[in-house]
Every structure is written in structure tokens, then in C-alpha cells.
Image (tube, rainbow, N blue to C red; front, side, top):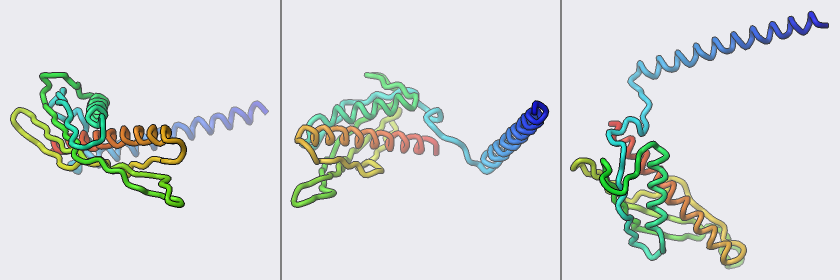
Length: 184
């Protein structure tokens, strides 16, 4: 019985070694293929700046506290990409204006709204050593919805979470566009 186990373990070790060699070979071939075709990985490390100053966000809507939520979302996203957010003196200056906030009914039962969507639009102006880049009417690339069933306070809490999610998605979209713009 001992002899059978060692034979089985020997085969499994050999199989693991062969799998490892094949995996490394495939990864090497992939990297050679990608690098030889002119493709390259881009990210925040390819940006020519390492810090950003986010000016006070302007809110042109009637929805309260959107400027705070958008500023927090932008700050979090830049920090998560390894870019320092400076109070003043950043290499790049960002101005954001929330231009639109709309609630829309998605689902209703017996004249009662059960689910709503949020549409949030933001204009962004990025200034880098005199170079101005503008992103108009940025909105979340995914539809942000929330449940409106239950108590009023539960519905308001869901709306607040959905608003934060919309701000976060817009911030991700913005940073992605900035990375692509500077990668060109």
C-alpha cells in the first residue's frame, strides 16, 4: 500500500511541474506577443503628475450636499490610484461642477414607486501647467438604482447610498479618462 501512494504522489508532483512549466511558457508567450505588437499597459504610473488639487466642487442643482459627496469620491479615487490629493499646490488642478441631478421612476406597483434611478452629471476642468482638459457631462457608466419600499427613512438612506455610488462611479470614469488622455 505504501508503494502505491509514493507512485501516485510521484505522478502528481510530475504533473504539477509540467503544469507550472506550461503556465510559465504561456505567460511568456503572451507577454512577448503583447509587447511586440505595440500594446502596453497604462495606469496612473504613466501620468506626468503625482499630485492633484481638487478645488471646491460647485453644485448647480437643488440636491443638498452633492458637492461634498463628489469631492470625497474624487479624492478617494485619486488616492486609490496612487495620486496624492493636496489641499493646495498640487501639480494639477481640478475643478468640478455638478450640473444635473435627476431621480427617475423605474418600477411602480399600484401607483406606488418601488424603485428609482439616479442620473448625475458633472463637468470637469483639469489644468496642468497651462494645458486645460475638459470633460463635459460626465455621468456614471452604469445605471444607479435604489429601492423605495419601506419607511421614508429607509428610502432616504437608500437614496443617499445610491448618490454616493453615482459619485464614485463618475470619479472612476474621470480618472480612467485622464489616464487614457495622458497615455496618448
